[in-house]
Image (cartoon, rainbow, N blue to C red; front, side, top):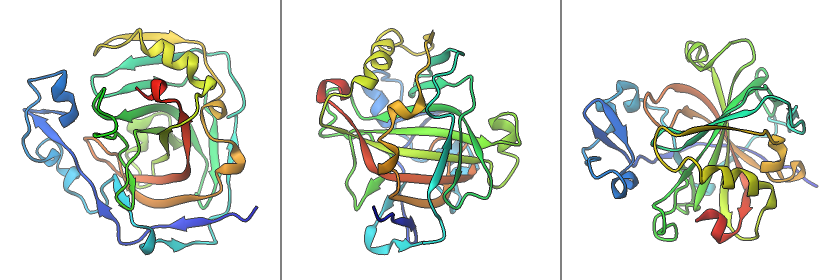
Length: 256
């Protein structure tokens, strides 16, 4: 199979944001949190959110350049289940899953290896996903119902805070999620999410191989690469983004 590696130019920056005092929230949160008003910009919370390398972006395919130097990504430990349990937290914005093992990603034009520390999901307004899709990135203006972010830090640092002290501290793998066939690999995780519906709720869960949550590795050869930022405050600019073309498939009930 021919692999296609892509780098981005002429990116259109997307921001859908709201601020409450020194805090921030998504506009979609207003349905559950009426106190989430709609002031203008996240840079009122963090000046970095006004930077020139902000994420997410709309990937305009006619402005994409093919970069043959990137090569395939390599995944270490993604197939292993591990013995350390995952920590799940509803932080009021999303569900964050903290990993207690450190699978690694390299290759693909990355200057070094990065270790996985957590993943989280972005989704739209519950019950209105068709009208309010939740993916952060988009392709030619088209969004998906959800987006999965798998966050990695440089393997030579201990945590995200230390990684942010460097100009290339984080690497995030982004996967669109579309409503299609049921995905049994997500059954356990989605079941656990029902137990942390409210902000501040946490639980520990049995780990899964990260690879089981992603498209097959042979489908990960086509991706978009650019240098951007975290998509929420503090909007740290030093994130190497890899946005995969092949989406994860879940059934409509699973997405909902």
